[in-house]
Amino acid sequence: MAPETRHLMDEADIGSGEKSAGQRDVERDELALGQTNESPQPGRTLQSGTHLARILAVRQPDDTFEAQVYVRLTREPEIAETYIPAGMFPTEEEAWKAAQERAERAFRENEF
Image (cartoon, rainbow, N blue to C red):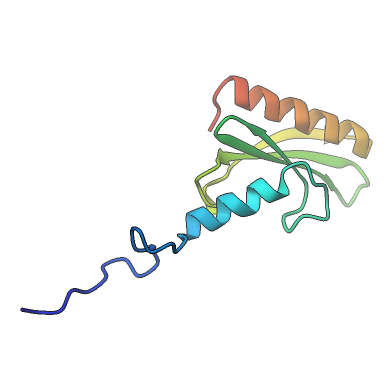
């Protein structure tokens, strides 16, 4: 009889106590909730149920700010984020406010 091989080397063995890559991503995102730019990912993180939104106010070369929103399920890695542009604004404060409002709308309307 041939020895058993592990089919998916990146996956944790059931019952082994190992964490999968997805579990590590979820734990990192849960720790980052409520933090601002000190978190490993830039921006601010919001959560609604099983969905996360990362919001940013990005300075542009003309000194305006682009409001950006990235949404995904908590169990999905960052590469699964959906980008939602939220507009250009003259001040950073307005861009943060617009990004937060757009993230909340994405949560309400299930835009993932």
